[in-house]
Length: 414
Image (cartoon, rainbow, N blue to C red; front, side, top):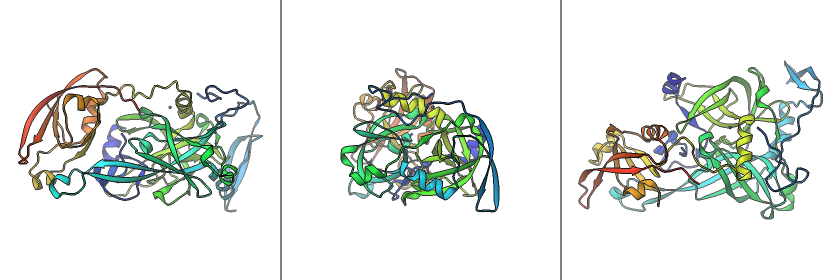
């Protein structure tokens, strides 16, 4: 799998609505960096469920499903399950899918050279799935990379209305997040149009089964793509976190991140997250979804408040950086390395004295040319470790000088 990632590259499937600072990471995708409990904490089982249905012992039978009158697919299902054709399925489940629009503020790395504002507002797009509710709110599962570092979030519903949303919590290591929308902010008509997704059992999913992906592709609103389960338990790395995923050839594009992968019974079996790509754009039909049976325990812990929102296993510096290409370095007489767009106030890098505008050229004596290399180092470190970071800092005349700064790494906390 290591060779595979080197050749193809996995990019998260959330997208920028417009391309300011598109090169920050993920080739134009906004940067970011898995059983089932039945109730939302503090509420009775009868009153507050999270869309998880009790298991029942039912007899399985073989059923034929006609698609377009030309293809017959044999599907194993329980006798109390319904099988949809694609159009009926889409109509049935679309009210449980939302679009998520985010606003993020980045520091402009070239403002020093060209003048103008040092900040740029970037709008990103993603998707989400409504998986639960209580008296006051709807709960939506999405990817961490859809919401990470955002200033604000807006959720769009099936009836084309939109409201502000807030983050309940995130699990960066598994690329999962939960967002909430207050019911008081929704009209009666919108409340009536909303549906909860029916959760399936991804552990029983088989290679070759039909799969339907629905999400906010390219930020244009809900779209439906159809394919098959291509592979199971594929190790995919997102922001240096290895996640076991479902592979599908149902098209997953930018904006689909956080959207739904359904089976023909209209059951949610995965959260769409990433796709494979390469520089020649000749990779087709390799999209990835987090299995719902892996995701729901983590989602439940976020809702219950038992997950501490800490990126376990990975240390944290608190920086946003941009890779400087060789041409950038030559053009602006800068050292080649990682230009710091921003340093998180009160974070480890800030406490150590790193500043926006610094260029990181080495960590622990190892030359650095990308944020990916920095993240790979942090993935092997623990909170509390001390690392030596080599930087170049410019003075008022634009002359760079080298410094070695010791950074005490911290924990990632939302």
